[in-house]
Amino acid sequence: MTYEFTPYPFTARRHSASLPSLRDGLERQRHPVVVIGGGPVGYSTALGLANHGVPVVLIEADDSVCSGSRAICISRRSLEIIERLGAVDGFLKIGLPWTGGRSYYRDTEVLHFKMPQDENQKLPPMINLAQYHIEQILLDRAEKNP
Image 1: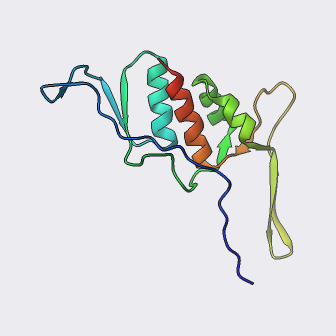
Image 2: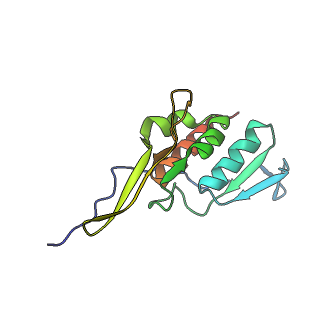
Image 3: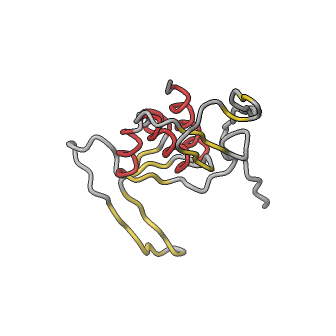
């Protein structure tokens, strides 16, 4: 039997390349920070700086968020950071929260774990969320910044 991979139903928005206003071929406004790469770290860095009033330019080779997923599990600590960036609601709305797992080798369980979680904790210990969703949520939040 042949299995054909069907990607999760996600359609990335395309963003046309744009240049800032130029005077004599130079940008009028200088930015103290340039972030190269729009993956989860690049978007988070740019968003964090913008939230603190630091002008930042993000340069990304693609015209959309990634088409695959290299990052999928997000820990509570990372969610706390994302919350400070103002983007955690999107992560919690789409992500799949979990508190433990099991791994098997053939019919034998080789790992069973449970992560600490109690009613006083606001965020789950872990969520699964495809990288393209992570990037899109961060990009959407960054676009809301003035």
